[in-house]
Length: 313
Image (cartoon, rainbow, N blue to C red):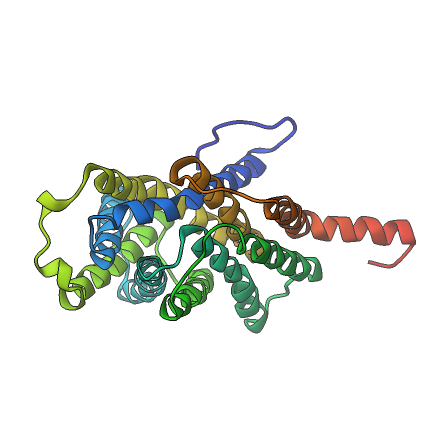
């Protein structure tokens, strides 16, 4: 993963981690607004499926160019499962929820439940989750709940159900990607996205009436630009960074992006969507920053406190 900047005293490994986190924190916070713009003239399921189908084809071509072997039969099956859960299932629910009335800020807020689910699957899988991570996750959800009252977050009950189903599917796919046998990262990403995208396109052709009569001429320049942004920045760059984090960072840290994304989504709404913010942001931001501090530095802070108190670690 490229290193775009360097902090004093940081090692290459730390810089890769920081760079991946910043990409996931910032870029994914902007994609909720991009989804709304893309869906102005594109059918939601077709838009989402084509996004991952295109990104998957690019990643497979890149992996083959790098000399990586094609996945084994078992790896194709595992990739289909993960791609079905994340690219098709979770992201499909996101676009449908936003089409049914869930605002981009609220959608980003609902996604904050994802790391809590991921930590739960991790604990059930036999891995230890540090107590400070649980506290940080709870604090982050509290901060996001405060943000949920910011702006106009009207939504239908069905849209709300779809919205809450998305992070659950995403967390299951995230956990599965840590456990299942998969090819090298570029090939794994390409296979998952290609298969998940194909599921989305096929479902759109069968279930989405607008897809059957849809014409390229009806697509606005803004929707096309937003779709390209989702393919390149939102998928090829950021989803690769997230998959790297899943393999190289603790689950709570890898999932901490979901606490920052609502903040970014709200500011994007202010800058591009004309939304207004109230004093709730001043309450939510310290909660979210405190959550990140606990997730990232919690174990070290606990050891320091125990040493000061003379408590055995």
